[in-house]
Image (cartoon, rainbow, N blue to C red; front, side, top):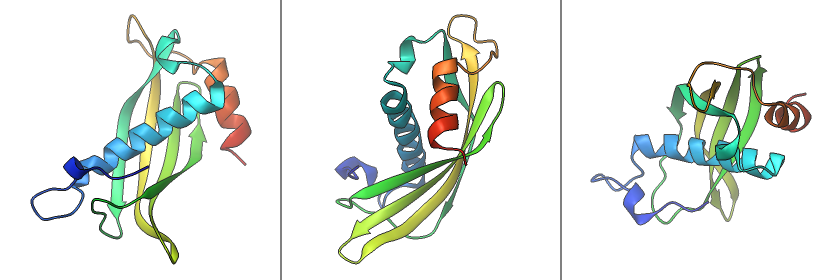
Length: 130
């Protein structure tokens, strides 16, 4: 994905809060692609219960980035992801940030915690766990 003009803050680099947006976009785009489903329409949806980020190098517009995703834990009602953001350069990938992102699945109507939908569990188990 590309950084956007509006991602930069007054100091000329991508603001820290924007990294969380990259994490959220990467996880949900991956889930849509891996499941072939519109995850917004499932009976259970993933809400972010916890997130963290450690910064390693600045990003700035117009950097092009890649976000790597791995599964740390696949539970009954939650998934913990490890994420890494890399700045793409002519020399390869430069580590910019590493993060953690926890999705807890809730009923889309009641918002009470429920089991991870089978289609999501299968995609994560097949592609992100080892």
